[in-house]
Image (cartoon, rainbow, N blue to C red; front, side, top):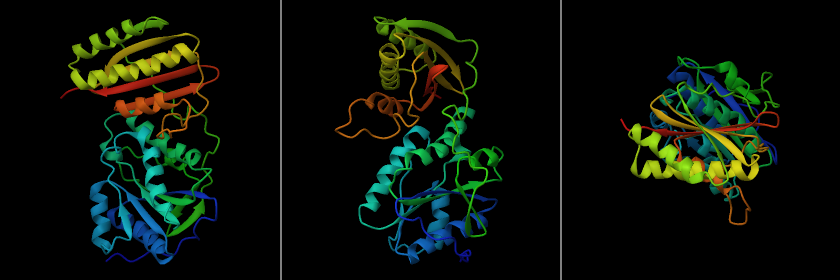
Length: 319
């Protein structure tokens, strides 16, 4: 049985969200930090939500009694989709916070399963966006274990995303945290050459869909996945026409065994969280980008007032 680590600082105060990085280098260090964190929560009467890869969840289950005090959530549907993770955390936390108990969470992305640099960058971007997503509540405490022994580890970048860091069982302010990181936190790479380009404006949506379908079918993407991609593309292109100066540019190419559809326009999306949480029934607008995140395997959005908006839709190609 792994011994618990020294006690950390106290739980978040009222109306506070706490986001903490926990770098570790081995299975033993992973267990030492997470088990200590969980036991502190349980001793204080707090609910615990754990969202980690299944092999890490198995490690935790082997060290903790199965009495239902720790809630393991199934991340199967969202683990590979960074744009869906904030919405998922909202649902998980709301479910337990509604019972009137303080909540702690443990969240570790499946970094080793990322199949492209774009996916890794979006996972890191998600970590920074968590601070904006929960700045206004609800009150909870999220510990993010991060394996520094991974070949693709980028601890300096991860550190910029977390206001606090845990070492030796204690939580301390993180002096490298960057609260003012702009919307282009992780700039997009260049379009992959060769690519096809298509200028679209009002009335060109049927031709745009045909263009994407022709490219997708050449790469073996068809049936349901092609229909979903065409629907997502229609949503993005419609936004370009309505809010991006009346026109946009579509580029398509294949990269990392994916079809990529890139849309550029002159509009500006001020909210970097747009589309990352399920819209409520009373919300006016904002459903299109949420739908796009549900339909695509990866969505990248970058927007600045000076350079406009770039959105990339990724669709996995058949094996």
